[in-house]
Length: 246
Image (tube, rainbow, N blue to C red; front, side, top):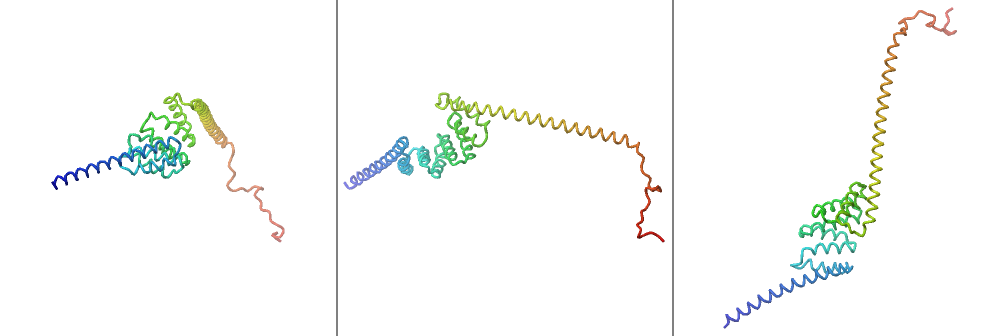
């Protein structure tokens, strides 16, 4: 009878443990979903609170790092945003491009444009069809004075997302950058032409100098050398009165 009692008690303990485990998992998912809803409702501060709890619970989807990083980003806490986004990119490999994309956004808003471009490069390497990364890298390259790369990225973005609401603005940027490229090419051509003209003038000057020296040497024989010792009147010594001989 005691054996049966202990077996029954043991089974109940197992069932209770399983129930607690299931309840804990469900609770974590609730925090995760709540955090997502708050973030989509433009309540990032509340979302941080919920998602921070969710990230501590077992069984929470790995993408919680992405949402928590974005929530911190939205409230201007860039340090914590980078921390969770950097942690998440190594855990949630399926969404790697989204982590790198948002890391690039964090760096961009801090005017760290070189780091921002590198992050967007990684995002594009992870997913070459993710249009926003091309758009933001184009904007970053404008900041870095890389108009040719920016022009290419803007064109790729429109190819990937032809129905974007920003199409007219981006097309204007493309037009301006193409004009800039034409001016740069014209300037290069003029510089090369100027350099070629200067080189031609230098060579011509050297040739004129060489011809003049040849003429000088050719006429040198018509001028006699002066005597080594002259006895002419030009070489008299002018004594002063103080030194006159008596």
